[in-house]
Length: 120
Image (cartoon, rainbow, N blue to C red):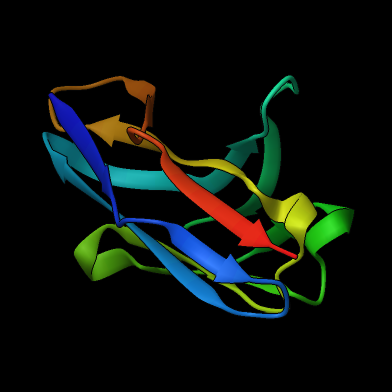
């Protein structure tokens, strides 16, 4: 069993910053890619940023230059630093981890989701 626990989001003013974290625990041998997704009301879930075990990153065009994804492999934790936040960044943010399990196999896991609200 694997659990992903996200930090609390919050309410910030436009132009502000917020940092999210997500820690994975359980029967994990290793973690391949980790990422952050978000879902706004009435919209589909979309990829925000992803990072490989080697540190390679990928960002949605809408957040490039404002958001930074990082990870601590020793702690099985992924972070999302969000700067220059805009009202359109308002969404529920979910972390994702592709885990190689201690007992074999590879499986994707999701965090519980955390609300980020940006006021104008």
